[in-house]
Image (tube, rainbow, N blue to C red; front, side, top):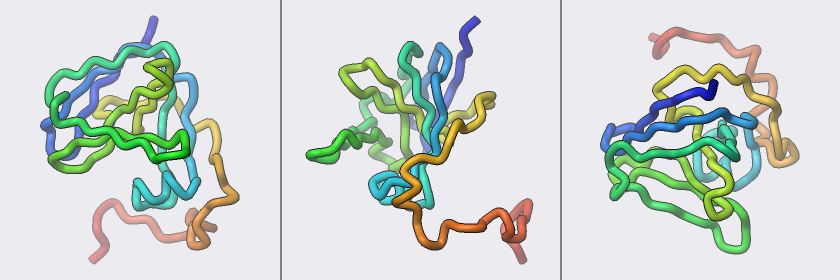
Amino acid sequence: MSEKHVGSCLCGQVRFEIEGDFDSFFLCHCEYCRKDTGAAHAANLFASTARLQWLSGRDQVREFNLPSTRHARSFCSVCGAAVPCEQAGGALLVVPAGSLDSEVRIRPNAHIFVASRASWDDGLQALPSFDKFPS
């Protein structure tokens, strides 16, 4: 039985549903993913057979393809949050894990493009952790 996931952007204008299973889950440290997330890495789920259905806000979704690369992303034009992106003519669905509102059962398969890892992204497991913003 295939899974069903729902997700949305930060402002809630874009809502979507994904039916099907994810093939892989990668934490990508490439220079492009670091730039477009503003973070140490992107956390993306990949699916070759899952179906994406926009529930609302499809007209708010914008796409950006970085020239001369295979790097592409989709985002809400209102809040800028990443949303699923269909690539390779719809043959590959890339879903930002953080855009999902439903639980993701698959665990990341690997860190990729670690040669591009930010210099400050090392040994982060040793940092203190807080349940909310520290006082």
